[in-house]
Image 1 (cartoon, rainbow, N blue to C red):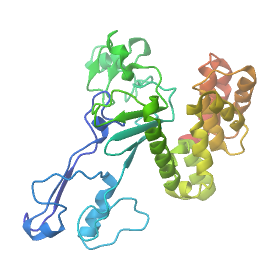
Image 2 (image 1 turned 180 degrees about the vertical axis):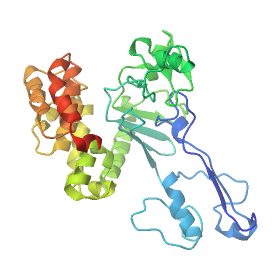
Image 3 (image 1 turned 90 degrees about the vertical axis):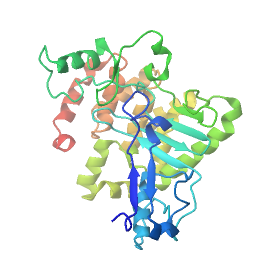
Length: 359
């Protein structure tokens, strides 16, 4: 069998420690890929046995590559590239990755990496770097006192006993004053990060605001924005919007909802406004009146990174009673962050009663 089989070995993500798994740095995204070609198939290999290939590759390249090795064409909608054999594509100039929901922790983070640089765009910068599990994480019920599960719940899930832990709950680290200086302990995140991987392989120093790196940041930002438009980045539709449009409007799968979202560029432009400071804030306030619920959702979400006046507060209050099951909870979240949680209760209860939301 060994003489007749091409063997692939790869991993899914980095280790389960802070700033690795679930984070879009190399420590979380860079994984091994080893392919063994037996002698009879050496002519299909990209290089000699025992050598390393420095091409930028993605998990999505594996399926078209395997089909190509088997002499089968891949569907046109495949976004991956063929890595081996006579149909081998040219190496990429960059790769794109994403971080979205993990269990009950929601994020929308995108990144593009070249051989030398990584650019990161965080669309929920008002959220902390190390989000906790305020509802007890994966515990369906509060564990009884005594067992070790209770100790974990108290040290990692209670807001007044905050600890750093990985998403699987196997690594706990007490928070010291010295540790709080690191990004992973900040209450909010930067909209943008730029890292020089060649000179800063640990991706510690954010160069996004360094004037000398501005052209590189602009170039990578545009490449990545164009990529999101090209692929109809579905996660920029809130999950409840995806469900509503899938079940009610199209009766089809999620991917088709994204493909048929004919204003995806408008949605992405709205989601991007939060990084533009006061100019972006004015644009977000204007978008609160947009007829598209996805645009309104990102307008509300973007405003969570700013302070606002009474006029904007009233707009958010009005959105509480809107029909969108994405916009109403987002408006409640924004208002609660300014100490006005009491006025959001009825709107949240109404959303919880919608079968579509939870069914």
